[in-house]
Image (cartoon, rainbow, N blue to C red; front, side, top):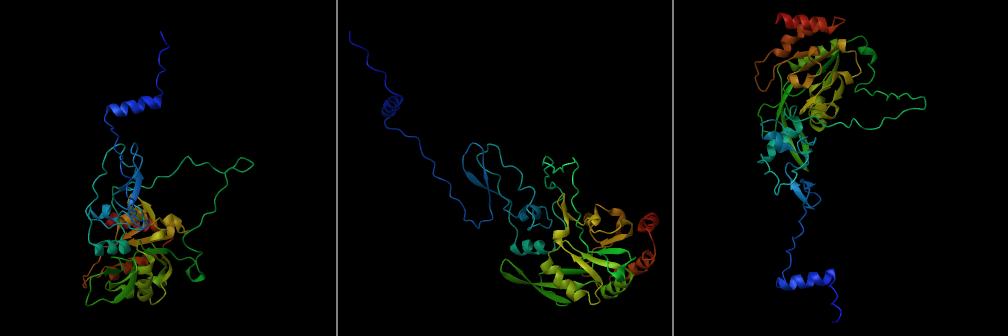
Length: 327
């Protein structure tokens, strides 16, 4: 009896198997078509699929906020977009419906509030600390938002004043009685912003500049708010101007953190129509009603006697607490 034939090699067995199936070959999936580099889509790798798919929301995430009827935050990536993608689903969630472009542009300039349910940006608490040779942790120098107070403001209380819906109201829609028209370039196109001044704002700013160290602090973009402040503040009442980049993005809102100003909080006030803007320091706030176009409004004028009184106190907390109790 002759020797048994040698067993086929793995490659030969694969060839025999393919011939038995009539030359069947596994279908080859075409490679995914990637968007151009300028595409706003966010691309994520889905586990188990080996390639990327577009993730809805885009790099800016404005539509997520606008679906809730709230202003979007186009220069701050939406925290919901930063969350991990689906673990093994075949399709990503459908993208939210898009709003008119003009509305997104409006929110990109003036937004103060975002989606209240958005989670705060994650902080890496496991980052290693730098330790000096003696085992102590060096203290990083604190950089405050405001410079040292000028000689004319020494001893004065610092008042942080909001812009939109507090001192002015702005819109892309043409307004026949606009006080200012500000050209603003957005995405290579120049848009006209129509600005209405709140009644008595001139009298208010002039007197506030005499009584306090006034600081303009807005969640709007500087390329819009700075020209408005140039035209609004004829007396140089604003000793400094702070814009969106100076805010803290917390739980979907742009918050004005008064502790970062570099002033004694017992001598700091904030005048703002949005409680979310001073959520870190509600005891320092003088609330003001939102203003849009009521030319019979007298709130700024009515507030002046109260600010006259506040300008003479050493600790603003006692006066504001008493005011809340009475009201």
